[in-house]
Amino acid sequence: MTIDERELAELTQRSRDVHADAMHEAREPLAEIVEVGREQRSRNELDPEVGRVFATKRNARLGKGLGLLGGVGIGAAILGLFERPAFASKASDIQMLQTAASIEVLAIAAYDAVLGLPFAGDLPAVVQTFVTTTKDQHAEHLQAFNAAATALGGAEQTMADPALAPVVEQAKPGLTGPGPVLDLAILLEDTAAQTYVANVGALEDENAKKVTASIMGVEAQHVSILLAVKALLDGGLVDQIALPPSDLGALPAAAGAVGFPNAFYPTELAAPADQGAVK
Amino acid sequence: MTQHDENQHEPIAISERQLTQMTAHLEEAHQATLPVMHQAVAEWDDRLRSENTPDELAEMRAKFGRPSRRGFLIGAGATLGGLVLAACSSDDDSTSSGSSSSDTKASANSALATDLKIAALAAALENTAVATYQAGIDAATAGKLGTVPPAIVTFATTAQQQHKDHAAAWNAIITGAGKPAVDGIDITVNDGLVQPEFAKVTDVAGLAKLALALEDAAAATYLSVIPVVSDPGGVKTVATIQPVEMQHSAILNFVLGQYPVPNAFAKTDGARTLSDKIG
Image (cartoon, rainbow over all chains, first blue to last red; front, top):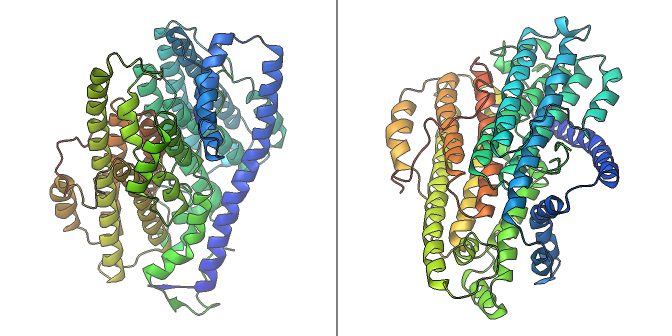
């Protein structure tokens, strides 16, 4: 096989840049999300028991940090402060399912908004199909999460995630071309995927866990395709955004891996369990 | 801009090994985003430390050591008997009274045995994927698949590396529990799918179809075991890997001209079971 070495290095670098940019772009709104979440929590009165359970699960993640800092026993001692009553586990599961539903509500609204953009009809046909199909898939996810929540005695969540919604609203004026649209979609899909990956490790109810597990990988697939499309768009290869790509040989080497940048799916963008819970 | 222009630069011959090295930058990028895996294994470590005396801990560390050359494995190796720990702690996070400790341990040992079997199956499936991608890369290098686009080479080498990482994660858990690492493949899958199908492969599309079948089987298997794995850290490990296999599937579908996210919910169809022969 022959490959232009300089081009390969350049494309590899570009792939790295795309990944780094994506992470950077994701982190800024994340900081905002975290801030909004903090403000909300400072205003609202969370059920202390439910909050404690969530803290337990979060601490399970944070506890390793304490442990790794050499505080043998300290992490465990802190975690020991958060014994978990059974009813609170159920409540925490409901919160996680409602938060998931709220993310789905927002995703549906966001894709709806994309379909209404003036340039939507000019997007590559496969992208238009993707937007429509993905919106429908999110609608199915919403139903599934709400069904799981109500099965546990919780209320349906029909409102958009209160922390993420302002981020979408803020992004809307800038949706003047496919690039910003893709960035926003990647952020929403990745936040959904990471939230569900984290929730699968925290949910107690078996059905809730199964439902969430069956959805997390689908959101990850949405991320993959969006990353690939964005890379092709950024590389000026719009013609390749087709099923199948018109000329696989014309794709840059780095395009082969741009859709799955991590061997293990991260959770750093995961929404807190109560973020989208019905109040 | 990214269009390949062979007239501008002198093409060079490049081996798959060299290509893998050059795309190691991507690997570095994903290494930087492994918090969930570190988290999951550290959780096991925390529990290990919280539920064993310093002497017991020292004995385990002396027995198993800290194996690895990769940062990730250093963390994973630190789990030592993570699953053994799970066996000792069972489902109940509260401190044991000791009155029914033998029953608890018997139940926990059973859960441990199942968890380890699942880990072994997962490692074998990952090894099967690694070997299949290697066979594909070897066939491509030998010119048996016709012209192989650079993006496909990058896909194969990156996906293969991620499967190696997954196998390493499972083997860290297995060896941490005092069992030998699983270096073999899933013979049932190899004999029933890989060998017969690979014999028919004559081009990139054929190889992509075989890879898709393996990725789908892996994703389905991980989804199917989530309700079965007893150790919370084990569930998290599965949850961080399953979406990545689904991402591989999405890109393969895209390359094959099939809709990349065909289902709103991941399926367990084709999931491998503990009856598979490993060797």
